[in-house]
Image (cartoon, rainbow, N blue to C red; front, side, top):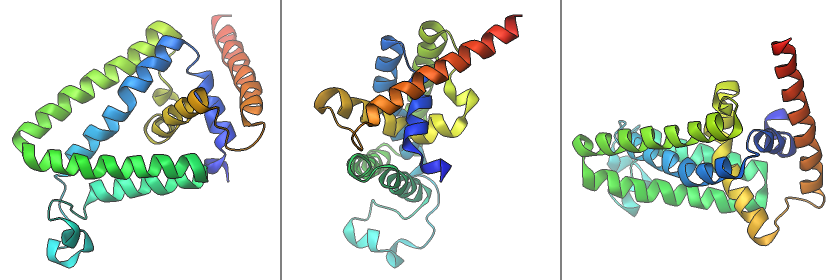
Length: 197
């Protein structure tokens, strides 16, 4: 399925994140954006009364609501993309949900939404500056919204795993992705050239 084509999606991401400063800005800001979304989602209504869910038996702060569904959806999707790195990122995502739930619960909505708003403004501004100033292109989320919100958190960690321990989902992955990145960049340049002429 196209939505699970890790090579294609990572090449698209790589082609839009070629500048080292933009890459660093994404590593700094993408996960805080997800984390603060989860803080805000903590305040969505529960799907069931707390006494009817297993989560309540684990800890009363953990609520079966949109935040939980959001985290589980992301976690399952990341495992479907790549079992090893995806499992690592899935656990990280679920840990973010747990910790964001405790932070949201201790802050309360009146303070939490202000913290989330500030973090979101800083995060989106930082990643946008990375694209506009350093890549000299519009952010990918304008081209492909799902790419920015769903896949970038996984790709940021995949990049870290590749650069730190040389991780590849399968042998030859990096070589194939590099070739696709070069093709994508050529395509972007051709499109820009046509717009200018």
